[in-house]
Image (cartoon, rainbow, N blue to C red; front, side, top):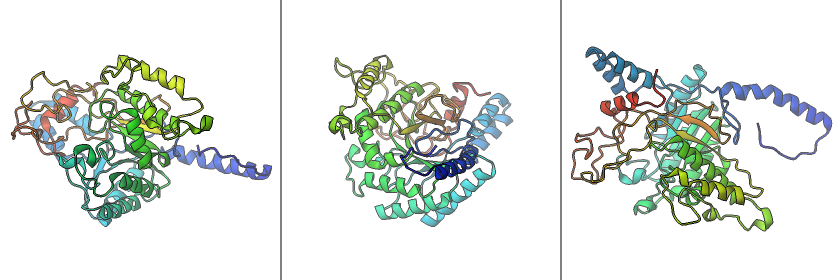
Length: 410
């Protein structure tokens, strides 16, 4: 499972090393965490955290109003493994909180999915605005987070929107050099040899493959397990699987020294979801994506993709929402869209070599925000109600997700 190396050793030493590795290998399988660049054990069991208290209240309400079927759907939803988010606090405080979760997970023989979400200027001052006040404060916070891992098996989702939504993408100054902070955090988390760290790659309807690949490499993806896709979004799983595979191929392509290294650093040459020989195509029309598949088949040479990825399937069971042609104000298709559904349940058994797992990273049922930022407010322009603040329980949306789950909840 370790990276291949070329050693010259005496036969006796090779034999001893092989014996040692044979003894160690079952430990990796038992923990469910693989060495960097390898697949997760397909039998990995993920941790189920304590649910949002709003979910418990909703179950009680539904039960008391004789809506037992809906109550059971919410109950099943919150009993499904999902991530634990860490968004604030002191370095010591986050260390203790992380340590508590990883110890609880270890006690249950499960692997927790932890989200570090505290980079300065996060979310471009939108619904989830906040983060550490300075770059140095963030580094101290991440050091505390890393110390809390305590060498336990764990998956770390590092800073959703951290690379796909740079301050400069929304016209703000990059005061603390966002990419360098992500790079620092990625390497700090590697102090836990059992941690699989994934960096932000947005989703398939956003940045082109080459742009996202370049950002990931600058953020340190070549030194960690890989990247994550679709967090808090609704893109179809097959779109994200395609997109993630291309990103990994692009990284390999632009780091392959074949033929004198003519392609080194040229992430911008990679085909993407916007590519065809006949000009730009619609990234939402997967029928056109065969052009990019053909490009990689023709241009990879000796390059072999090794960077892995995971996909957030917590809310993509019905795919993305298509707003009406003339919504009142900005419909914001990513913000609490109606009639979405839960997607694939978390599993490391994906059947795709580079795709480590389907995970529920965004907590289904928690609000994306109040969804009126670009309108006069205070009502969600689509739902016509005042949505809860980001992270608070949203009963209406929770029930929609459970009812429209694909595959259906038991």
